[in-house]
Image (tube, rainbow, N blue to C red):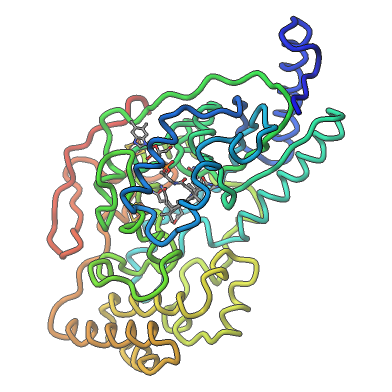
Length: 410
Ligand code: B12
Ligand code: SF4
Ligand code: SF4
């Protein structure tokens, strides 16, 4: 049901729509969202075509749910025919410290910034519901639905159309004011709200995010092969981590932030002030030895309220075993050995791999950690990728970065 605030098309209705949008924006900012935009509940054909290409190439790997509901994802009205407008919202989760620094601490696990605090699904969803309740009260007769992440919604293309930012070459939404560190959420509504102008691409000739990816997961700019992405491999992928990705994984045990962290637009980002996203001390740089010893109950207790809980103890300890193998730390050999007969065959196999790799490390020096760890997440430290900085390829060979080329403005 289309809910116009006045008769559609009249000057009064346009003004009422504008006033409604401004009131919604003010309420959303009051609730803690960092950025808000409006767009029609309609996506261009290109979004559907690109999604179909991605799926046809099998780049979604085992995320079959992406293919199952592709039509709904590609078009808001495919999911909810009554939707007239979309309010897109971003919540800042900018880290206070450079997340790449954790990659150098090989006896520790690196957990992605987004997963070190409370589950963002809970935090963002609860704010979206508060906003939704307020909207329904204020605009009587209107209807709405709220989403964050898990629904078949093309969140990034909608956010770009609503002016929140643009899809960078790493495919995530980059904001001129928050860099790469925004969670996205949406309100689909029957209200007719005036759209904001879409944001244009500000990547320019920059390709830092493409260069830093440890697994070469970008077949081309703006395209990600999820099957090669460490975020997919450590979180979504069940079964053994394919051999090819084990060494590049380093000590990343849940998600990966590399392509986000090197974006030069992060220099405008500020550390978040959302208490729910405050990193838990136990998850900032946990000792691999402690994590390797977790049983089901210990895992559930440690990760209660965290998104990490979703992957379960076995998949998590599998990741920890790969990190132990990559640690180059002989004192962790008994830790791996202790899991070599684990009841879960995938954990056991990863543990045996770790033992073998640590034994090799006794004779061969382990590959150095990510040399780009000196970089900046928020722009307060020198940025990586400047000419002359070198990094280490997954095979341990040092390679120069491409000469530095900047995004078009920052
Ligand atoms: C599936 C998924 C994943 C998969 C696949 C990621 C991907 N890029 O598709 C995996 C598990 C790998 C993943 C990882 C991560 N994810 Co994720 N993920 C999603 C999810 C559920 C769907 C994304 C999707 O539809 N992908 C399908 C592809 C086809 O869509 P796409 O990337 O938009 O592809 C477009 C481009 O390729 C573009 N395109 C193609 N060619 C060209 C050419 C040009 C010139 C242009 C301009 C565009 C273009 O068109 C395509 C269609 O729009 C969304 C939530 C949601 N409901 O949207 C979160 C979401 C994208 N993820 C998010 C996050 C935070 C992450 C991680 C950072 C987590 C981490 N630290 O480990 C990583 C980042 C990895 C990366 N570089 O993308 C956030 C991103 C927030 C933001 N600011 O953009 C989202 C929006 C969740 C949320 N609500 O906040 N994720
Ligand atoms: S999240 Fe990591 S592995 Fe995935 S595309 Fe970005 S840099 Fe590559
Ligand atoms: S500005 Fe550079 S690092 Fe940021 S998304 Fe674009 S190409 Fe990637």
